[in-house]
Image (cartoon, rainbow, N blue to C red; front, top):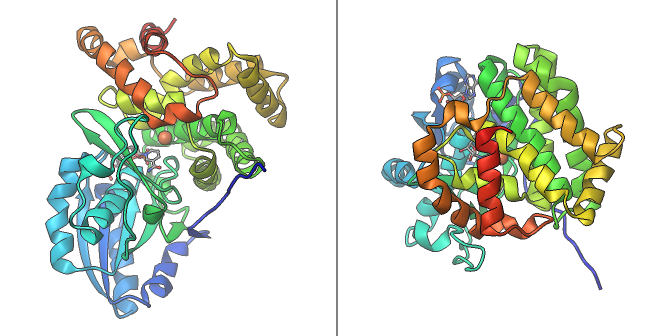
Length: 381
Ligand code: NAP
Ligand code: FE
C-alpha cells in the first residue's frame, strides 16, 4: 500500500476588511495576547484589533514592536509577559517573523518544562523530542505576503545567526485572517523579498519528495500568481498585492504538506547574510540548476514548467532568473563581506547538510556540493 496525507488545520478567513472577524473569533475566549510588529501598530491595525477584542468582551494585552528575523533569546524575553497575563488565545499581526514568535511563545508558555535545545530540529540524523499537546489557540494575521507561517506548522528562530525550525502540527494556527488592507503598506523591498519567498516555496514544494497532487495544485496556483502579479505588487498595485497575499497562503499550504528543500536548508543556515526571502531568491537558481542534474528532478521541474505554460525546465529556470533580475535581486558579493563569508562557509555548508529539509530535496547533495553552491551564488556567475 502507498499512502500520503494532505491536511490543513487552519480555518482561513479572507477578504477586504476581514480583520473584523477577530471579534467573532475571540468571542469564545476571555484573555487574548496580541503580538504586533512596529508597522502594524503604526498603521492603526493594533488599535483596530484591540477594539474588536474589547467589543467582544475579552481582555487584551498587547506587545507591540515584535522584531524581524527573531532569535530564540528574543522569545525568552517576551515569555514572562505571556506567563503573567495567562492568555487563552494568542493573536499575531505582522510578517512571518511575528507569527513565528507567537508560535514559539505558545510552545514555551503551554509546555513550561520544554527546552528549545530539545525540540528544535538541529540535525536530520537526530529526531528532536516531540512537542506535547498545547492548549492555547493561535490566530495569525499576516501583513507580508510571503512566509506562509499563517498556515504552516513551523516556527523558524535564529541562534548565533543560524536558523532552526520547531515543527509540529500543534503550532499550526487555528485561524488565519488574510485581510488585503494589511500588506498595502509594505515597502517595495519587503513586497519583493517576501513575494520571491512565495515562488521558492511553490517550486521547492512541487519538486519535493513529499509532494502530492494536492500540494502540487496549491504550488502551481501560487507560482502562477507570482509570475503574473509580483512585479506589479512590488510597484504598489493594490489588486496585485491582494493576489500575492492569497498566493502566499497557497504556497504555505503547499509546503506545509509538500515540504521544502535544499534552498531553504541553505538560507536557514546562512541566515546572517540577508533577509529570508531575499536570500532564498539569490540561492534558488543555483539550487534549481544543481537539482536538474538528475532526470527525476528535471522531470518534476519540466512538469511544473508545463503547468505554468512554459516549454520546459530550462525556460522555468530562465524565468526565475529573469524575475530576480527585473526586481533587482543582487548577487551575494554585493551585500555580504567576502572575508566573513569565507570564514563561515565550511560551517554553513555542514549545517545545511544536516538541515532536515535536505530529506525532501529531490537530489541528495554532499557537503562539498553545498559549499560549491554557496560559492557560485556568492560570485553570482
Ligand atoms: P518579516 O521578517 O516578518 O518582516 C520584514 C519587515 O517588513 C519587518 O521589518 C516589518 O517592519 C516590515 N513589514 C511587514 N509588514 C509590513 C507592512 N504591511 N507595512 C510596512 N512594513 C511591514 O517578513 P516575512 O518575509 O513575512 O517573514 C520572514 C521570517 O519568516 C523569517 O524569519 C523567516 O525565516 C520566517 N519564515 C517562516 C516560515 C514558517 O513556516 N514559519 C516560512 C518562511 C519564512 P516592522 O518590524 O517595522 O513592522
Ligand atoms: Fe521561506
